[in-house]
Image 1: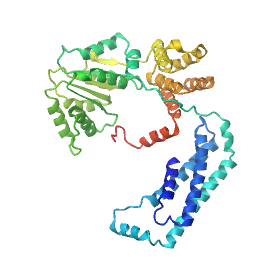
Image 2: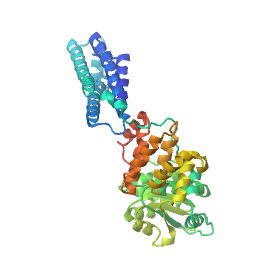
Image 3: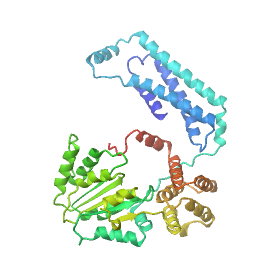
Image 4: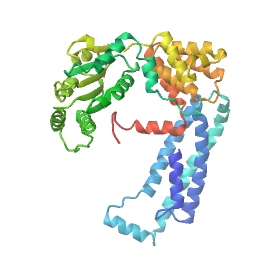
Length: 421
């Protein structure tokens, strides 16, 4: 509800025509104070890990009411100004405002105040203040730790097959265009590893690009991003897909390039991308990531030696990754926490993203209470599959964020995948 409070403040500081009457200003001021009160109630209930049903119903009612109020306040503040007649009326309204309009605004604000007061009364009637005694979310008190390149290379890039894969990318003697693929299910670190390889070897190429696609890719956007990265100049938005492909092909024709295509789901998508990448004897490299084995083989011309299958971490490397993220080293872990932390690592099922997410949640706490550790272990242990555990780990990480960050992330959900601001 913070955006609504901010807009009510805007209304008080710079009232638009029709809102400057004493009744409207007094109503706005009282409404703002009451909205701030229910906002504090809403924040308290949002801290609960498992709010009761009546609390959830009350929170939904509050949010719906806040949306209605915000829509109305927006209609008062953001009046269209692109019409000459409207501009003239607004200029005149600064001097003379029809009394009826002022009365309607004041009555509407009073009506909203009545709804807000009823909402506050329901909060008391439902006895929701007792919810403060229930289990609360563990909100981050420090920065969330993000994966770093050396952590990934030390703890995921581990076996001989991986070393062979890296060496094949770095092999300058093989000047033919080579396509390699990282294959594996979600959350095994394919994208993270691809980013590490891209940053590690990218400086050895005259141009490079890292392009993300998806299950339903926007190929025009993907080629636009690719051309932008390789030539370091934004192409025209009016270019058609065929034109972008031709420009990419022409630009890369005599160059040594490195291109990473992340999250390919269909062989047909790969065929289109492959058409834009010219063959040659300049030592160029293409790296793709996918969850589909058939797509991986198609990318590599059905040569399985160029496909690296990502697997779950074993117990030793899972513990090493977890304790390195949390304490810097397992040797720094207090003895009283080792047993429950080892149990948490075990239920993460060797998924690097789950391990790092949980370690980051714990690292952001000012202390490590036993009930938090038990709660995390029980939450993960109650899941029956690796995908459910991963979802629960991300849910714990999301709930650990401060309110302003959760609001920001929920806002970003409105935009399509891969959207560039």
